[in-house]
Picture 1: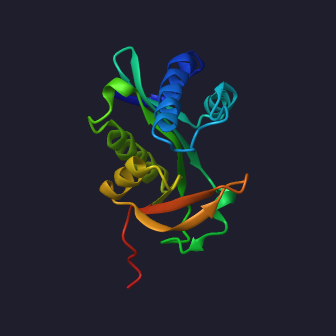
Picture 2: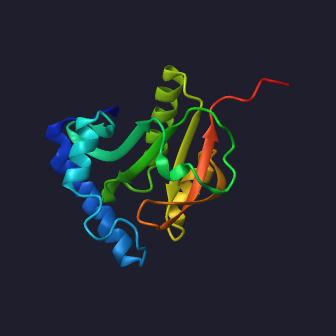
Picture 3: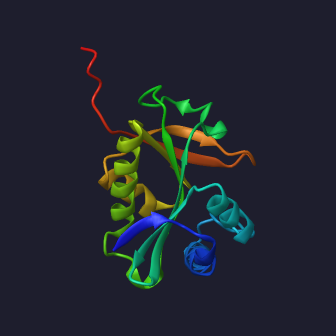
Length: 172
């Protein structure tokens, strides 16, 4: 398996995975990724901005994620407290192709993101998820993320916020 930056030619397969996730959320009653979000325009912008990544098994894309190295405006205010004030990477739009779910591939993508962060000198990763998205919450806890509080997206919707520190604070 290869974790790599997405290219324009990957858009169709990425959108297939996104649509599968949207259908799953709709079927289980989670109001996340509905109302035409994320759409091809959002993913195209992620690719253009070099923020989109895929997990590929040979020629098949089996996972997708967006990683942004920089400030997330929605994270400026939190009902709670972040673990740190360090520079951070933000994980958005993580999804695995339906037939590959349950194989730990989202964790594989998170480990690859951690390695990218360490190589860039970034020692914190933040992510948010819908309060009803229990599988994402379990994924984050299983991978060492800590619940920090509630953030609000630009449209006002509430999200649970998590952070993971990649090094221990050594300022004893």
